[in-house]
Image (cartoon, rainbow, N blue to C red):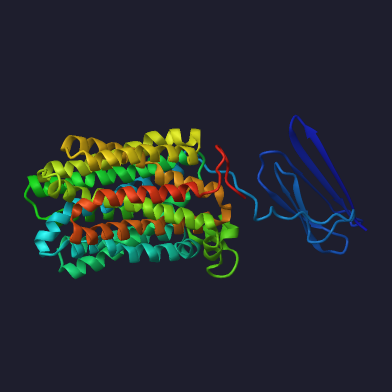
Length: 490
């Protein structure tokens, strides 16, 4: 019989394991592994002529010898459980990670430009197509179908195609939609093509939020990510308004720029995430990929936290896009302001969101997401009342800019809260669903404003926004307690 002798020595914090196997056939093999060396596997002859393996893993002392218990009756070591929580990756851990993050930043610039373009274009769409408030509001509603489909299929795309698939499908939808919009098709075609743009936005919104939300310092990084969304949303009305009012170009000329940006987005994202395949995603997220088809999304949807975050984001995004989308029309029709300064009010709102996400992102994590957002809500309600009740252009412009500033960190804070309240293996499914479902707020609620405005006038915007602030505050307060600095759940 073969005999096994195992000896472990501890020297200055590092461990060395020596395993010797000796047999009567005089065959001898020794494996010595030290800290920092790669895993090594060596074939060993046994007495009966069979072949066994001896494997050592540095740093953790795990040893697997063959497939059967050894002579001491010890069972082979098992792999780490799939419930283990991986260390959070850092955005600057490698050049590849930095490039990926910069690629998502650019993607969010385009997503923000897409969502903010509706507002300054609405008055000109009404005139060009000779349609009413309700009909023109369909451009807000139609992307809902795309967002809904993205919420359902997000997890499957990750499992089958990985982030590479997201990097092809999302920008591809943008590119096709903007090419069609550039040729100013009949209005029904325009409404349908916005579904495709909504699907692209929803898919990438879900994917990049889930990826960045699982990084170290997520509050700060998400603040920058959504800050770039705000940057795109700031530039979009500025460029569109200037092209139409100053250069005298038709509304669809704006989508020439968007087409070029979408083509660049496709190239940048594809080069950044080319190696992130579905197979790699399943290896890195074993629990996400186990179970029956659709099992993870069903498990995520059974959580009250998932639905609370999703409904909160639905309301928040509705506030953001309804206010940013209808503010130009409100200023022109109710405040009787000229077209260009009315457009600049929208620019101020989106600029406030951009700065708020970057600046307040550093404060939110320090005082805790639950308390910070509750405090910001107080400022938002006061500013909304000022915007509504003081009918002066300067007051309205300043109030709406600061309203955007305090609204800015809401979305990133909700994503961080989800990563802290939900198990790690549900992050892609739950956060992806909540982000895409919440994105539907950009469709439903601005459409509701337009439908009500058709009967009551666009002045209904202000009480509508105030009511949404109160409802979303109630949803936020209904979340379980989030301890400051609490890490991800296993």
